Length: 352
Image (cartoon, rainbow, N blue to C red):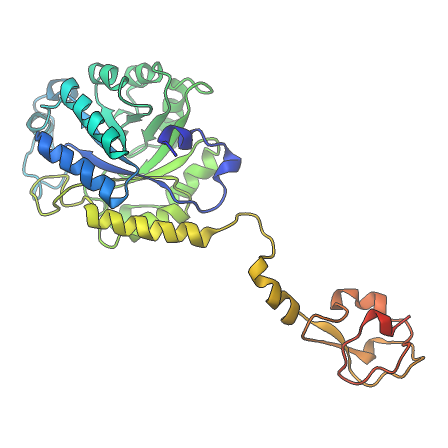
């Protein structure tokens, strides 16, 4: 299923545990190399991602030259946002068209987050869904321009309050453009104690008409955090993706790699299996237990023919091949047609 279809799911289609849509967030981990970008696409597909997402920007349009860093400068020593963005802003229209083609060849959905209108215009020809980053949740003119493309939107909600989410949604032509809200914590990396996965439940309760997802910035570890997010109701998962977690830089060390992704996909597949039906009913596999583990009315003592059956004559024991204890009020006061032995299951043909 494509991302655009998932974002448009109605509430009734979003009940129960299902395998979420997985986005491998490559960002700019290609570091300006087309070969590396191709490798990221290939490995994201091999690991089981449904989509790979890049980022599209020009440093001159995203940050002033003295904009301070807000990441761990021990991992990424660049202390200016502008200088960091300048390192990796070499890809533009031609390069992203090639990346889109590579994605088509690999049968993996192509996405890229635009950070300016110029990039959004050419990305509109390459994508069915737009992603708006947490950093732009208060950027009214940009949000309105993205909404004008009339395509589903993934809206990240990192570092935002509900009034800001409400405001952003009001700019996205409600009723015309479908929006998915992504719980996100804008820390790189995010400490476990700051992940606040319960906010996924809060978003589901506050915005029942919107599909809720989770954009994760914690260290990959055992990837259980994404399983928990799924159980809490996240239907779209996004996590930074790299071909080598040992590389220097801000987005490699807290990213997942192909092995992490494959492990996650396997576990999420089991979650879907474990989730099963969302409609409570007896399973076919439970039929033997239903028959043999439930109880029947049983003679506590011998009941002679002609005896009016009283409560003290009865107990209830397994199996369930006799009269069900639910019918006890129908049995009390009736007369035994035959002698009923102690510890014998009562059958309807024994009484009148």
